[in-house]
Length: 173
Image 1 (cartoon, one colour):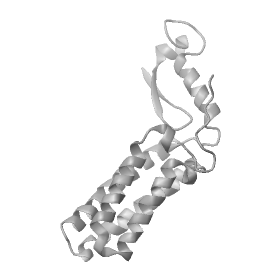
Image 2 (image 1 turned 135 degrees about the horizontal axis):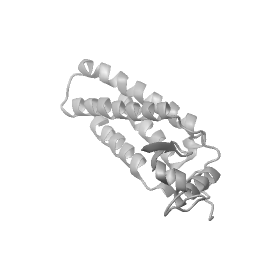
Image 3 (image 1 turned 60 degrees about the vertical axis):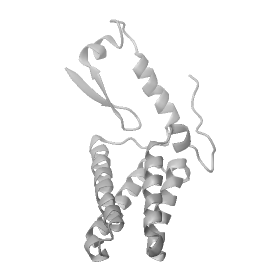
């Protein structure tokens, strides 16, 4: 039977009972290569708070909601829907984005000055500028979509780079 274990950054990994009993590969006892990876992550991410399974699902559901409602607002603006028809979607976008901000900041207090946090600052700024310069709404919302996509999928070395501390320092062990 398989069981799910959670590493220090909240990612679940599946490990079979036979692997747990033997301690790794090929019937050997002791720690496996995947256990060494978890230990390495524990050393690197000491400042990160572990994410419970419930918090992880809250993050996934909130992120999915945010993408859906923001996409509805984006499509409505692109199709020139009246702003009254988009108001509820707009407020849901703000609320889900606020929850995502809280979850990220709670998990990683250094998040605001890392690459991923800096892109979120840009993401929010462009969203706010839509209200100041509604004539540029389509261009600004394209910027919001692009910055959100890049921030979510850029390589780790850029997501974890800090404006205060530079490149993330990782153990060589």
